[in-house]
Length: 329
Image 1 (cartoon, rainbow, N blue to C red):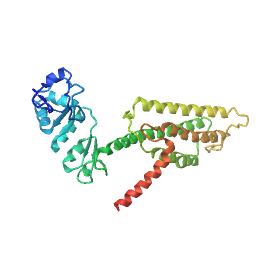
Image 2: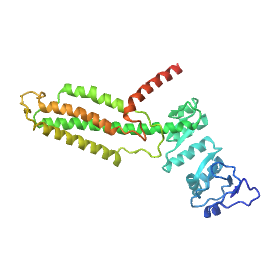
Image 3: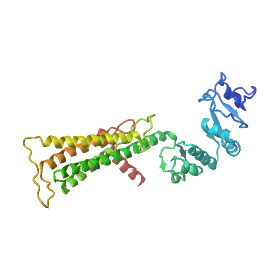
Image 4: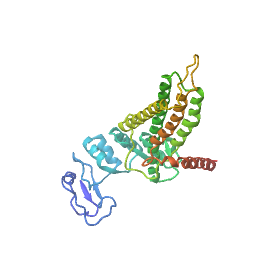
């Protein structure tokens, strides 16, 4: 039964009745979130969800009783309750496991040894101290409150988007070289080993480090990044960029052969025939495609900083690492 703390003499309100009609809170308010504070004795719960103006605060004892006896009430609590208090360590862990089993992504903040089990079970475990909880949690914050959680979410989303961007760029890089090699083989030529070395050391590697060192965006977006590598958004972006790269290489190759000064390659036996117009033109053109591809895949907000700020982020990150190491020494 529900009872309002502001009206101690008022008869308790049935929870079924509370769900059947819109609950009207009293004039005096003592709770910040829901305009009224109520206590419920978890003797029975409705089968339907609670109204939007009703908030549930559940204790560990009530949660344990529902988990043991009333599965319907437990399901309603998991959907509607926003506050869980006075819970034992094992109850925290069971709650997080129950939410995870129902498809929820659960984050847990803890600052003591009694939170270790819950921190291990959570999808994202954040320790607010450097004591026992920091051993169980994959993340440790130097700030002893939950204000660090938005930053953790921003960094996690940035890391996820960056990993997808790196996959797309390395795939495009391989396909650019593959297309170049196939085109040159049609005229009896192929890229030379020094060209491969130049591309890997001075084009692809610096661009990869520069783009993947981007920091997270300073605001936490309501939009969530794509979580699957095989999603339509990722694959369509990659395939479209690959098609553009292939088409432009073919156009460049055909345009080269229409020039008045063009001389076809003279095939030499037992040679890769590297020194030719076709090889040189495609080599220069594909270097531009590597730069264009990294710019196309390096998406900025709402999850990452723009690519033109990557250099600043890398310098700040290195300075932070040096300062952090010096502090611990």
